[in-house]
Amino acid sequence: MHQFFVINFSPARFFSVSCLVLAAIGYSEQVVFAQAQQNDIGPTFTFGSGSSTLGVEGKLHLTENVFQVKNSLSLRPFLRFPANGIDLGAGVTYDFDFPRYSQVTPYAGLGVASLNGIATIPGLLGGPSTREQFNQVTVYGQAGVEIHASQNLSLSGSLLVPFNNRLNTNFSVGAKYRF
Image (cartoon, rainbow, N blue to C red):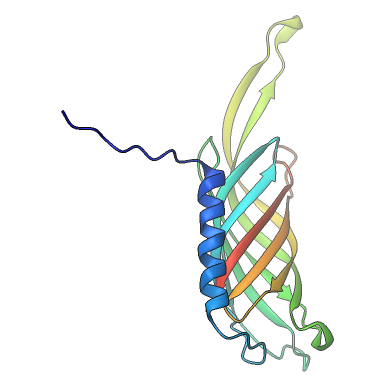
């Protein structure tokens, strides 16, 4: 008789283990902020719509020294796995660089995403309401901040505001490996 080893997988455990692995990788490197890496990728945990979602976000640095100021543009793609499908999107953000606070990088921008949602449709003449799942492409506004914990590790928090009445605002936090 064979016994099978079953792993109890939950999004919270996956997120916690991913953050610990990234922290170990980031702190194994020497902490040097002068040669900071510009691109990153890592797990995120998103809150909104009364639920939480696990996902992956990244940043691809596009430009430097825009308008003779050391600010830049970045492409920020994301992939999330809510219970009702997959959310996919990408935004272009303007990253602010403050020389005095080089470990903190706030950003703001716009993007396009394919987001999932659940709409509650009221019943006619007092009848029971129904819930309908939908997928909609929308434009969104994004603002957030990255905290560079080491040369290879950054912590992030961002707010995603869809320009659509059927979709809700989301807040995500994450840890990312910088390269």
